[in-house]
Image (cartoon, rainbow, N blue to C red):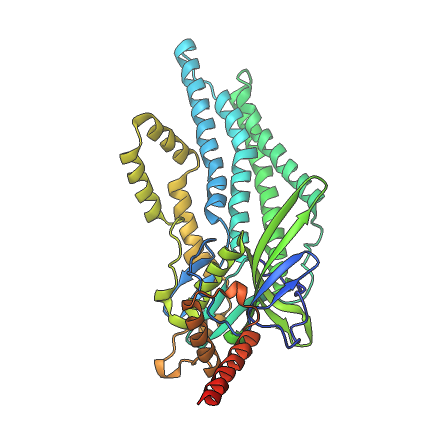
Length: 437
């Protein structure tokens, strides 16, 4: 989903008078179908085919895409690897004790060092990378009570670079910490040295490691505070619902040996001084124009007819859904396939992954939103709710009758042209009736 501080180009200047719902245009990359301004009924069934709906209340709807569960499972996979490696070290230690009658710490030193050097850092890195991705992909929020759309964008400015820090410095720092950890663990592998000598080496390694972590931690603490202060800030642009630009674009990407077709649903707020660019935009790959219309109807139905007319957010990433799937699998699967599934569930720590994902959806993603958006999202007394325009109500009534007669939104062309032609035909019928009278 596109929500960055870029200024994506729109398919044509939106100031042109013929840009409206129903318009079809051919672009350099493919073709598009306009859905707004004037969010008229398309006659399609509302379906959240791409799981774009993340949260829904009586007053507002959040659109936020992304497979958060996969990221959590991938990070927790390293926890399983850590446990398996330590179990392997335990097995070797027990086997050596049973054969020789002596306890050795060499397997724990080697495996524990590998875990500290590789498994733990990568697991933590993937976990925090997932948290960062959630914070940097804020939702689009639609408020039906105000009939407005809040579109996220990042304030203009370059990303703040940490002083004295780059990929090379990070690499050397990582290698230095790994070397110090190895120094602290190596004495356990030498069974022939005295206990005092080994303890002194371990103490020296731990002291050096503590100094390194203190220096690195202090630097990153102040550097990240500076980065947070100077980085582009998340802001929301509030825009009237009935003026929101929306379209479905089908593009053909042709490469040296591959041709792929992509269909994207886009919501955009045009720049006031540059109608060819968007002030803020959000897009999602819908796969087909019909699926795009169904996805658009989810949004339109919520804004026009309330939360009951809009599908609920999918619960695939909730712990309740995971438990229900496990109970269903136990009923339907035989013993061996079910055991295989449980092994896979444990390896990817899916129970814990669902807990982390729910926290990210319900807490982390909302924690970084501006206070202005929270105030804007507060419920209003019903007498203060914004009302749809008379023009939109009249147009939707006419379209509903047209759909009952079997007409299709995708075949009708521009709504205003169809409406003008309809009025002209009605006048001609009335004229012929008066002439016959």
